[in-house]
Length: 82
Image (cartoon, rainbow, N blue to C red; front, side):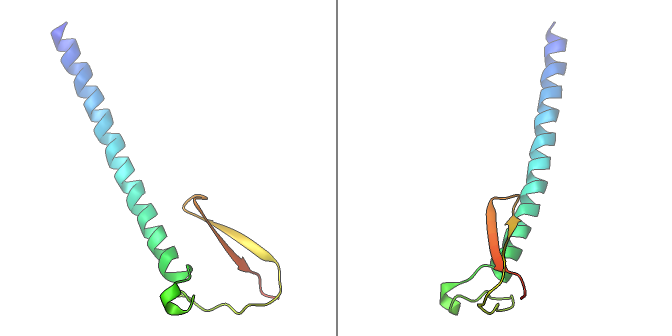
């Protein structure tokens, strides 16, 4: 009986470690995507509402579109070219 419990605990521990590793990998991907969004699309007040690395979009008329970042956690809105 004791050996079965040890085997079961080993399997549970292995499963937890596998989920932990998968979570770390997904977290790193999300961090990279957020940093890319932060530096290329998000406006910064210290830079007169311009993104540090991205192009400056002119205000104007046109259809507003939404792009989801981080699986929908952040919504990025911009105008389509007229």
